[in-house]
Image (tube, rainbow, N blue to C red):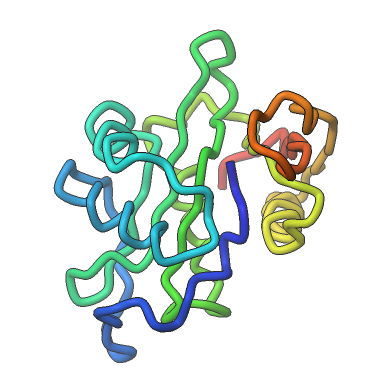
Length: 180
């Protein structure tokens, strides 16, 4: 679930240098802890450290990490649903405060779509809460960049969530995507 993907707290330490170039790569299990720490210092929905390590190990082809000076500054975790090989489902995007406003989340999505593991993918999907305007804008920008549609539909109603106050989750479906 995406929640406040650009609302990372600025006091997160250590802050990467502003002079290094950001490089995108396939994650390794060693990146899992840094992903968890980035989320822990943000407003994103926190998952267990195991989830991030597992995504790096078993879904590395559909996950991307962004590093600056060998420090993780962003990531996207995603997977291809077994019954829908033409879809990549984005579980979470995290961006370090030092990268806010630089388009890193968009770059991560483009890196994901261009991966060999996504060669059959024609649609990018994610669930987003109604109040998460940053993520909504991110997926609408992705659709515009590929000159395609962004359809929004109901997915999980708030009564499905055991904790009080969880908003409904809407599905954002971008596509069909024509690879460049």
